[in-house]
Figure 1 (cartoon, rainbow, N blue to C red):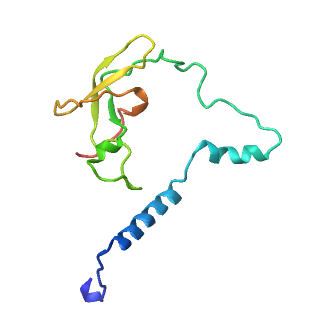
Figure 2: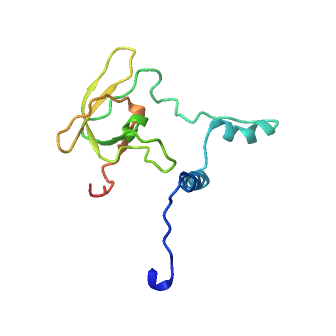
Figure 3: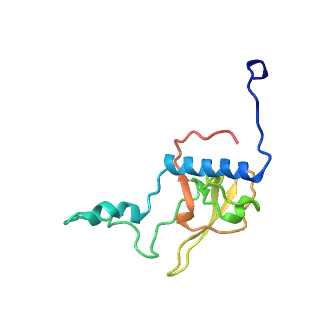
Length: 147
């Protein structure tokens, strides 16, 4: 790069780092637009008649009577803010765990959601439990990257 006369610049102030972070945030917003309910309803509000259908099938689990996930599936869990190891959240951060886990144990109680405990391939268990909405099921025919 030096032979072509290209000068490499490094951010030396908080202002330039902030500009780059804001650019990354704006880029993520434009590439992956928000899908909030308020954004989706703006067109419906302008119309005089709106036909709506449920986005969930009627035969799915209602309330706390849900099916348990089988123990032989691979999952990733939804990261929390404290899983980011003390640093602040940025626009391009991962939402799901980088490692693949399996369901080690599940607990079903009356009128409560099913709780799942996860274990990785090395036999290490996670300390906290998860509900179904916090787990991303990975299909068996998915080719996983090397870890």
